[in-house]
Amino acid sequence: MSIQKIPLDTLKKVRQYIQVTLSLSEAEQQPKNWAELNEDNEPPEPESLDALSGIFTFGGLSEEDLSDSTSRDCWFISTVNPANALLKLPGLSLKPTLRLVSYLYRAGEDGMGLVFAVPEASSTMAVLEKPLQHCKDITQLPQPDHALPQFMDAIAGDRSPLSFAIASVFRRELQEFGPWESDVNGTIIDLWMRSPRSLPVNGGLSHRLRIFR
Picture 1 (cartoon, rainbow, N blue to C red):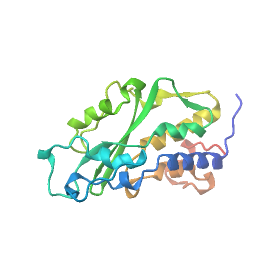
Picture 2: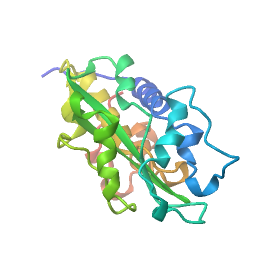
Picture 3: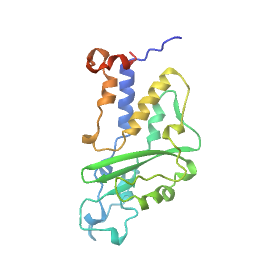
């Protein structure tokens, strides 16, 4: 059986590209709520999809839900389209009639994100907002109707060795989508991306870790 060598620098560049594609706008990183607004301070009219994120944050809040707090638990639909990263990833593509959608949670210094794969017909705002009505805090995770069991089920590959390696990096980055930057624990993935010569030898890790170089 032949062995396909994949340069470590290639995977690092792939990871950096995916991270940039999944980066959040300032509006999504620190969303506002209705309690911060008054009659003279209405949300601006959105000029782009990114600018819509602040308005999506307000969706689903009723009068009785409002408080004087300037920071409240909130799940909302993210404007980040995870599938955009697939446009330049060799060997990978999104299956027809499927879409990747993302949710974000923000409350004070807490934050997390979720990515789902859904049929195209279930990717409308009306359908995606529906589960938000029942998600009041970080312990109640939204799940849109007809979501696939795994978001990677929506990804097609050409079955080349490189596509499997890139798919692994892509999956990992989508699993890490959404947390506050200070909350992201990249120890495992950073260790995987490091040179074998820099890996610690204690703990028996070296014999279980295969690095493509």
